[in-house]
Length: 227
Image (cartoon, rainbow, N blue to C red; front, side):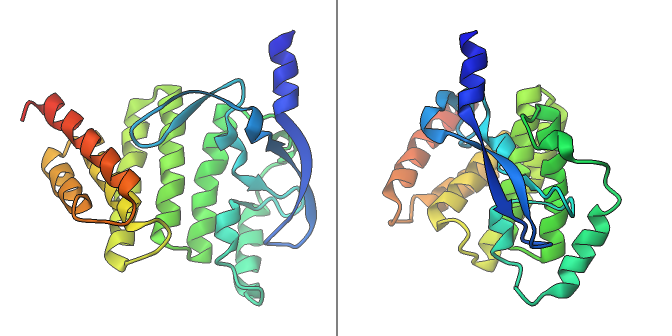
């Protein structure tokens, strides 16, 4: 009985104004202060007990059925009617989304995570934001223990983070972006690329906490590769 009560307490009802159609729709929010962390991976994937807040980062409008994250909305201009119409037309054929208004499953999160990539591409958001969503999808596959799909989305995340780095985007700090490129290179089995990215990270000076984390992580990677 206790676990059922915790599930109910961790989610609460709220409302959100759709960035696409402008209507207010119901959503579930997570009481983050009550979350219990089990562990964290080196790419910052966090495991939670009872409820996974990652599942509720994606918003699904009850009316136009558009799927997105709040960060994507920052790049949709108020007067961009053409993009809004394009998004509404795309999602108009999607089946009823009422099942997503309550508690979400891992499969729900996978489905709407992939859809939010399409929304981001239609809006034309920075590579760094798209990469972050690819990371979420990779983590969902990690939770599912589908390692093939996890690696596929880690590769897509790496490619978009690399474009973000090359374009000089500011969606992440340079230190965080470089750390992730080094970590993802390692997870994808490219030790040499990982070495190069961590070497770049160690020349940076602002976010010392991430630089130090990178030093610890690189020592572990070298040890695992017996270098």
